[in-house]
Image (cartoon, rainbow, N blue to C red; front, side, top):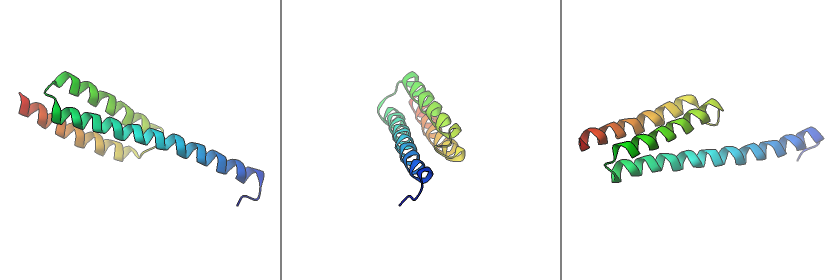
Length: 92
């Protein structure tokens, strides 16, 4: 339990930041699933590249704002890029 006004404020701020960061992480997962679904379902390379571009942009932004670690963002982007490239090679 908070004893001072400053700790009460800090608790409010932490909760607000937690909800904000949680929403961003959720959108990252959704974006990743969208790319993976496009890889497995579609042979449209242009759509796949566009979805990956949006995914990478969101990951980089989250890493820059320290919502996720920069190495975690790089790892996730790399893994999806490998799957994307394998699918593109397979379809051509």
